[in-house]
View 1 (spheres, rainbow, N blue to C red):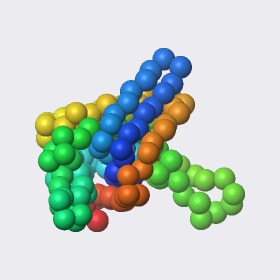
View 2 (cartoon, one colour):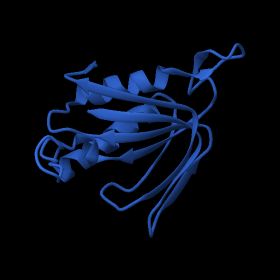
View 3 (tube, rainbow, N blue to C red):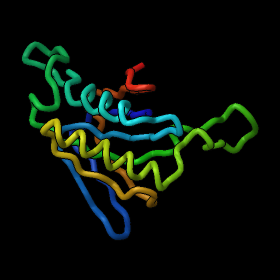
Length: 150
């Protein structure tokens, strides 16, 4: 499992049929790999919900998303599993099949909600227009395999 986290002052996602927006919080680009297991989803939700990426009164990143009452905008992103080693067109064979990935993506968002977070989502598999104001900028890449954050 791979997640690109961006700390944002605001973010939104739009399709022809769907619109969601958040203010302060995290934009998560979520990739589900063929080897992703339930333990990865759980570990990632716990790690992200407790990550101290917001500044305290001394300007140090010492506050969690819960401390600042922030929200999450979660976007499915199979292209995080692009293999670009050969040729000019990426291969996505390391990404989990869409039907299974969709269920795991939904489960991950559910686990984030169980951490008392407000989570809004894009539409799995849809073309989406995403806008964000990256705050900092702060961008962190998380990876998990076999329930261990790497």
